[in-house]
Amino acid sequence: MDKKDTCKCKCVNKCIKKCINPPTYTELAVPVPIPNGVPKLPSFVYFDIDNRFTAKQRQRIKDAISWTMLVWAIHMNQRRNPDPSAFTLTECSDFYATRNLQPVWYKGPPISNGLEATNLAMDQFTQLIRDNGFRRASPAKIKYHIPFPITSSTIRGETASRQTRVPLSFVINPTQLDRVDIGNITLSGSMFHAWLHRAGWTHPKTTSYFIFECPYCFMRGNQRKSPAIFDAAVSRLFD
Ligand SMILES: [Zn+2]
Image (tube, rainbow, N blue to C red; front, side, top):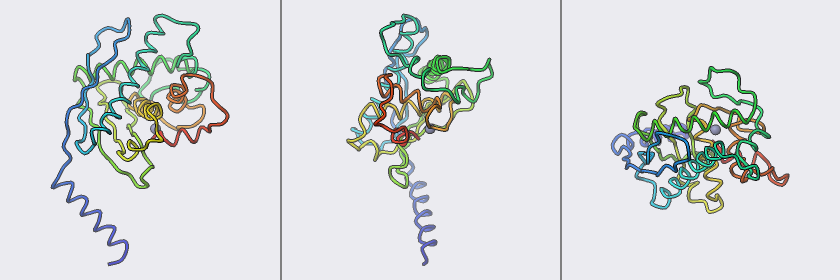
């Protein structure tokens, strides 16, 4: 058998294995932090998570989702009660993000700066949280996938083309969750980036584009960039 046939054979075997033993899922509930002045929020968001993730990996995923919602809740609180001394996600994104400021489904007046883009993104997170928590969207799935090359993916969310009833589904690489050099904030940045895809924002994931700059702002505590860290080193962990 030549190399091509061996590959084909391996692929077919993998397919058969998947058909005989389809992945099974368990529901994971994550508490929603409740910001001031945002009415009608569910107490939890729910995910059907692949049972192949270990307890430790599941915890890391849960923490990254909690962090992402915490960023949203802090933003919502600051919008209502501005604190001039705080470094905010809005200010940071406004400074760095200048391109691809609108989600693909957006038909309103043009979004011209990072401030408006951040407000719109966080309002869309509210929509995602409500549609998930009140089970208006179909169940969100957290799929298990080991890519090739093995570090080529971390947390992947498809860009959503509509505004409502979008399932908060992700494909997660378990091997990245085992890496001790990927800290909780970095992993949460990757999760936040994936949420922005589910909110309708799209690539490129590079300097000056909203889908890169906004999660990267959160990862730095909304402080200015350090010249010692290259943008490309960060965006490698965003899918
Ligand atoms: Zn991406």
